[in-house]
Length: 58
Image (cartoon, rainbow, N blue to C red; front, side):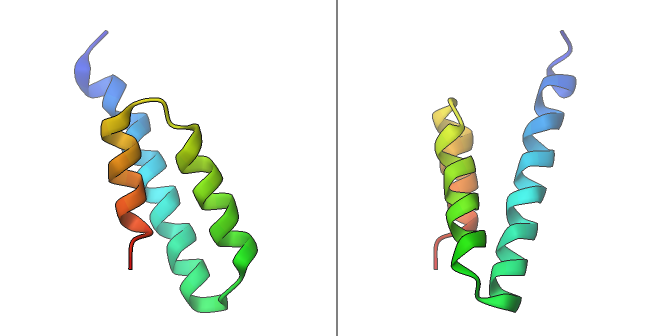
């Protein structure tokens, strides 16, 4: 499998988590944050888990 094809889903996941962060900042809903953190926990690759968690650090 082409390496660029495998990385594409990771970029989509990052965009989704960044979008959830923007929603959280706009509406301050704890449910959004909880859902995002659960999605991050489901990631099996430590490299991407760290990348996704970086969106939520502040």
